[in-house]
Image (cartoon, rainbow, N blue to C red):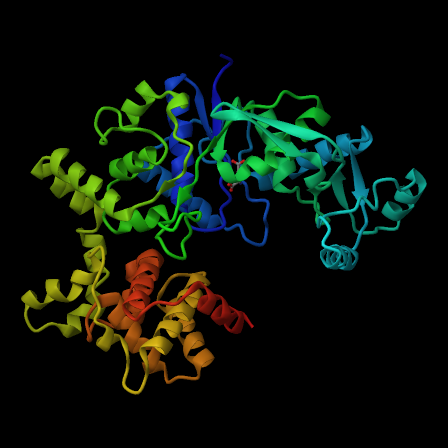
Length: 491
Ligand code: GLU
């Protein structure tokens, strides 16, 4: 086999998803088994949504999991830079090559034209997609438009007929009709590449041998294969992993399950158990269901990957985690683990500014701050509903609080307070009718420490889950109710 080089290529647009950890795990295992290299590349070309803080969090989460990378933006390496925003001139150069070789073309269609086209196609119940309008513009016309500074994108010319065969070592070849693949935009009008161009250029230049990623990317693969062909490059070997699923069989999403690695860390799961559980999502037990990533690297056989997709069952993860705590730690190691987690001066110290005024005896402290350490709390429905309010409207309010809090950029007490005020203003409720249910949701108790400080210290992930749990206690919201509510909220 050629040198094995794999990569994880996350976009830093939110907290690190367990799905990213799951891919990283199989990358790491494959690299480890084959004495290869594991590369971390940050795909931050979505300027509006990428944030440095998410990149930092991602690296922290990967480190916590113990999945070390050999090359990356922080450690460098021979194929850098490893952040796509630092490689813009490379993409421009390669896009220009494709235009020069006739594989790609500038497209001057305005967003108005594209919207009108989409509407017409929808009305005529036709395939919705780009119609190739700018494919055959005369060279003179193109030059004149560019000279005149007309905004444009670069599109890849796609075959209109036949089928693309996607080879994947985990499954039979997959045949996808070219007719369903649009002339893909490679460069946006702001000079940034799209994911499709950047991923192919980088995987090639970084000499990635195997692309291990989620199954949701299979339908994008024809675009990538077309790019490899246009450049005259050999594509990598693909391994599309089965998806992680919600209990109802849909793709795992944070609407129902906690999806961020940070949630699991914060709620007290240990990295070995989380990785082991993620491995079990696609791989059979190695003798026992409990096995380490090192064992997996030793025994790994891609043919054993089970392609069905697995339901992420948080109770089963809890059970496995318990086994690690009971079977894999001496009492001393467990104590060290608790200290490293949250039972330390730093965390407890942050409670004192607002707890000191609330104590009569030292013995009051632990019971009052227990919710900061708990995996979950159990609020009572009657405590969650302020006087003269109804359970259903409080559940709706809590959902808007989840959305408002999702948008907090700087997660501190002022950021939380601002979100809470927005929620109160939206419903035209007195602020108390918002803060009372929130404090009950977070602490499980009717009275607790101040809301904004508590949420700030609890962190966004646990706060979010506790609000979702409280909504369930109040009967929850159907998907339909939530989407109606969201329209009103986002207006
Ligand atoms: N940036 C893509 C993501 O966020 C990478 C997909 C791939 O691995 O090709 O998932």
